[in-house]
Image 1 (cartoon, helix red, strand yellow):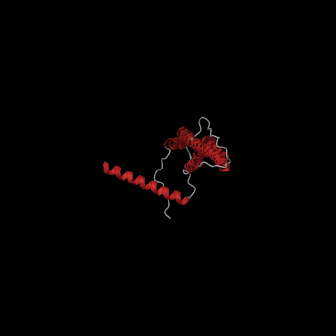
Image 2: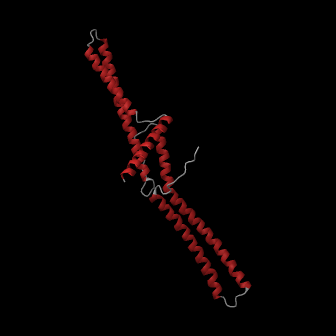
Image 3: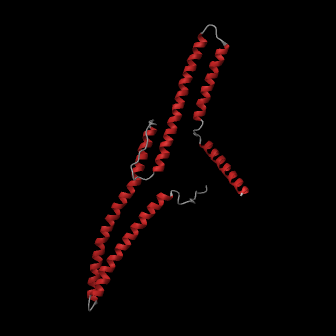
Length: 220
């Protein structure tokens, strides 16, 4: 089975560029800090020290190493704190989506995801809420159709119980039942529950896309 290879790496350009900027800025900050420490603690002391000897140079390097160790610990805590703050903008929405998915899976189709200002994944929030609203609309239509189906069934039962059944009335009730059943079928026909059917539909859609691309190339 051929492995799927990713061809497009910048999928969410704005989101990815923001985090690339954060990572690069952090690296530059650390590099600048280390460079500043080395320059102002080693080279400045070396240039200001008269009669530089090996012992004095060793003392300077020991002081520089100790200072670098302290600054390394500081930068480690700084980057850790920044990582928690930045990752929370992703982890928070992911937690909300997981919680909302469980609520919707339990049957509450009125639930909506609400992200806070400054969080990422607002596009996913809109898509998620749109999906929930679409499912809710389908369920409402299905319930309305079921209510009409029950009413038509009751009407048919009452008509049959009559001693003299009007064939025209029976035909009308039967047509009502068929209409309701067809409406219910159309409501649920958009759902794909068979993997083979989903794969077949994907191939058909891919074929249509390729045909449209060929037609576009011919027109160009």
